[in-house]
Length: 626
Image (cartoon, rainbow, N blue to C red):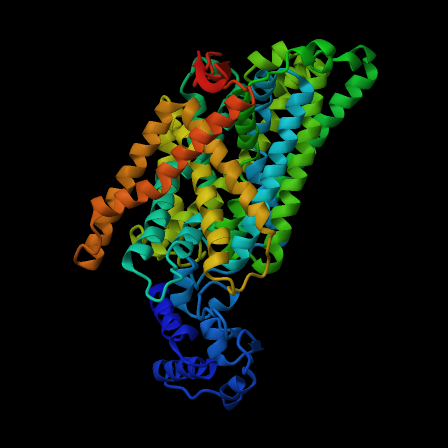
C-alpha cells in the first residue's frame, strides 16, 4: 500500500467525518474488512464501547490487521490512522519499498558496526586539514577550541533529531525517505496532488544532488587524499604527477569490490579501520602531551598567550566560516540513517549509535586540536597543508614522522572512504526502489545480496571525479547543499509532523527546542555559505533548478499526463522558501548592525557594510558604512 492510498484510508476514517467515535471506528473496521476480505476480531469491534469520552485513548490489541496497517492505538480526538511510519510497517514488500528497504537485504549492522560507520565517516581527512583554517579565522587557540566544542554541540543536536527520524522511518535512504513522507502528508481532509508533490520533489532533489555529485564527490575527495599520502611512500612517485589520482581511483574500485563481495566484508573492514583510527588519534594526543611535559618552554604556547587574545577575531563572518570548517571535519554523523533498513533493532540501536559515535569523535578532536595548538605556532598552522606532518616533525623528527604520519592518515582515509562507499550506495538503491531513478540500480547481487549496481554507479562517478584535474567547485557545492537538506529533513520530519500528525509512533523523541535550535543553526550556515561563496551558491541553485525540471518531466512521463502546472508550482515553492530565506537574511543583517558587529568576506573587506545608528535631530536613522 502506498502513501497516497494510506492517506485516503485515514481521511475516510477521520473522526471529524462522523457523529461519534463509534461511527469512525466502525468505518475503519468495515473498510479493512472490505479491502482484506477478512473478518474483524470481536475483541477489536468491542473496543469502541469503552470510548465514550471524547479525547480518551484506548489501546488496541496486536491483531493481524494492526500489525499490517501500523495501527497501535485509537484516539478519539484528532486521530490519524494508518500513517506508514513506525517499525510495524516492515511486513510486506510494498511497505518495504515505500521505506526504501529491499526485502532480500538482511539487517546485518550491529550497534558496534553502526558506531564504527559513524566514526569511520567522521574521522577522515578533516581532522588533518581543518585545524589550520579554524585557527586562522578566529586568531587564538582558546577561541579555536571553543569553535570545535560548539560545533560538536550542534552535531549532538543534529544526532538527537536524526535519531528520532531514523526510529520513526526505519528504512534506507536517510533524508530522501524523510522528505518524501514528511512533505507528502497533509492535515486537511483531502491531500492534494500539489501537497504530495512537494515531498516528492524535495526527496528527488536530495537524490539528484547526492547520487550525481554529493556522495561520489565525497568519496573522490577522501580517495584523492589517500592517494597523495600513498604516493609519498613510493620511491620516485613525485615524478609522476597523475599517480596520486590513479592510486585514489584504484582504491575506490578495490573498496567497492569488497563491499560488493558481502555486506559483512564491508562492515568487517570498517570495524578494523575504526579501531586503527582511534588508536591513531590517541597516539597523536599522547605524543603532544608527552612532548609538552619534556619541553616546559611550550607551556606558554603562542596560541594561548596574551598576544593571541589580542589577535582574536571580532567578526561574525570569521566565526561562521571557522564553524563551517569544523563541521566539515565532523561530517558523517548522519550517515548511519542512510542504512537504517539494515540496522538491527533500529529503534534501540540507532539512538545509541548516533550519540556514542559523535561523542567519541568530539572528545578525540578536542584532544588532538589541543595538541596541535600547544605545539605548533599559529603561523605554521595557518600556512601548512598537512598539519599532522608538521606536528610529527616537531614531536618525532623528520625520519620517523615521514613514515608514521602518512600511515596514520592512510588508515584514516581508507576507513572514511570505505564507510562513504557503503552508505552512499544505499541512497542510490533506496531511491531506485521508490522509482525515483531507474529501478535497475535497486537490484541486489544474486549471491551476496548487496546493492551491486548502485555500488558500481557510485564507483564510476567517484573515479571520474578523482581523475579530473579539479573538482573543488563540486566539493564546495556538495558541502553547501548538505545543510539545506539537514534543515528540510528536521523541519519537515519533526517540527511539521509533530503538529500535523501528533500520534505517529515515535520510539525516540527529542525536545522540540532541540529541533528548532538545529534548524536555526542550519539556516544560519546556509546563509553565510551562500554569502561567502556566491559563485558556488549560484551553481547550486542552477543545479537544483535543473533537478526540478528533470523531476517534473519524470512525473509527467510516469503519470501519462501533467498533473501540475510547473511554472505555477515552482513559483509557489519559491515564494514559500526563498523569500523566507531572504527575510531571515535581512533581519539577521539588521540585528548584526544593531549589535555593532561587522561581517567581512574572505578578503577582509566589509561584505554588506556596517549598520550604524546616528542621532540627528532627535531621530535615529540607519546608515551603511563600507
